[in-house]
Image (cartoon, rainbow, N blue to C red; front, side, top):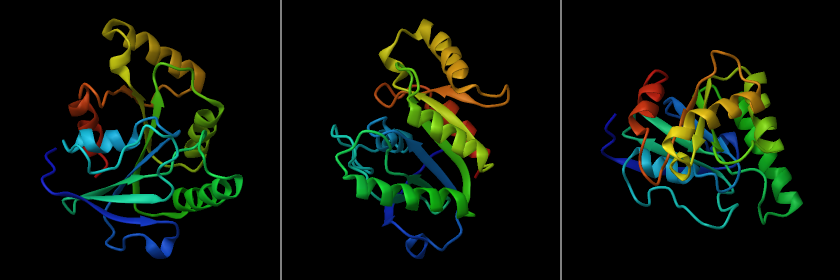
Length: 193
């Protein structure tokens, strides 16, 4: 899919602030620094549409990116390590859960997990939560360029075991840095928008 005019739309922490144009929403979830913002930039071939940072915990609101008025990429704050206070983490957790549970425009949730590491407790919690609320989802095994291409299928099999996925669940490799697997991911997203 070719996106010509992607733009940042709004940052939100409550339903009153969400866009009201009823476009489908492709939601990005994952721990801090797993590469959600880089994923957006890679998919639309931009360097800095979504702000990236080497410092975990930069995204503290739900960020909506308008994709040519066809759909939104929705970047959730990362979970896990963050310099947010416990109070801020609790508040963020609450508005993320409210968004995921009640938003009718969600067409697909993309859970990004670093392929190089065993899923964290938080990754497993998020995966189980997404499954429990009945949202459609795919899992992206991000940073796949960091391991040998021949080993990617083995790492994906390990990920399936750790998460105890169903045979119908989709796990795809991805790399923002090398821009590989982009077409495969677009093909999957297009099914939901």
